[in-house]
Length: 323
Image (cartoon, rainbow, N blue to C red; front, top):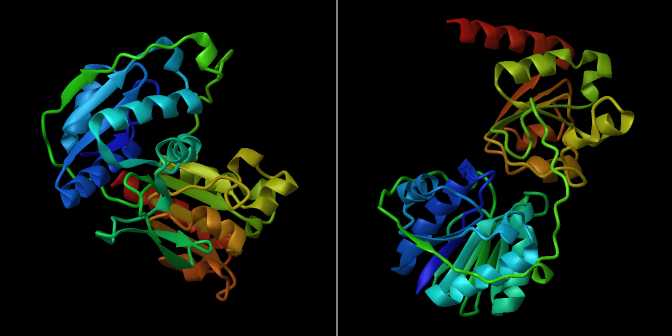
C-alpha cells in the first residue's frame, strides 16, 4: 500500500507547487501508516528528482519516453494507473491545475476511484476517508466522503505549507512501450512568453479594476509589480474595455489563481471575480467604497481612492527596498 503523487515538472524543473504536493502526500502517508511514491514523467535529471526527498518522498518512479515529453492526458493517465497498480496505491494526489484537471477524471474512471477535486486541507478522517474543499466561490466548505478502495485528490495551490521531512529517495526507472498511434497530442511549435511572470506561477499578483478609471492610469500598478517581482492581473470589465489584455483577466470566467499575496486595487469584489482569487493566502484590498464586497474576502483593506493610495504605496515599497 502507498500514497502516490504526480510530480509535474516544467522544462525539467520542479516548482513550489510540486513540493507542496510532496509535503501534503507525506502527511497523508503518515496518517495512513504507509509510504510516499512520486511519479515523474519526462526528462528530469536525477539531482532534481532527489529534491523530492527533502519533502518526504521515499521513492521516485520516473520515465523519460520521448513521446511523453509533452502532456497527453490519455497516455499520462495510462502510465500513472500502471504505476499506481504496481505500487498498490490507495491514494493518488495531483495538483488542481490544468494537468491535474485533465488527468484526474480519466484516472478516476480507469481505476474506479472516487475523486475529490479542489481539496484544500488534509483529510478530516481516514476511516471513513473524508476531505474538505471550498464551494460557492469560497463562501462555504463541503466535506466529501471518498468511499472507494482507491481515492484520488486534486490539491489547490497554496493550500498546504511546505514541510521538510528529508529522506534519501530511491530512483526507479519505469520502462514503458509506446508508439505514435497511442499518443494523440502533437506539439508542432513552442512559443514561450519571455520577460513576464505568468499569473499561474506568481507568488504575488497586483490586480486592477474599474477603480483605476482608465488604461492611462496603469503605470503605478506596473511599477509596483516590478518592485515586488509580481505578475499583473485585472478584473473582467477592465479586459472587456481593452485596458489590459484578456490573458490577465482573473475570475470565474478568467484565470483561477492562488498566489501568496493578491492586491485588489479598485476592484469591488463581484462574486465572479472572487471565485477566481479566493484561494489566495492573503488579499489586500484598496477601494473607495467601504461597503465593497472585496473587503469581506480581504485580510487587509484600505478605504480610499486607488489613484491616491497606490502612488503612496509604491513610494513606501521603494523606501523599504532602499534600506
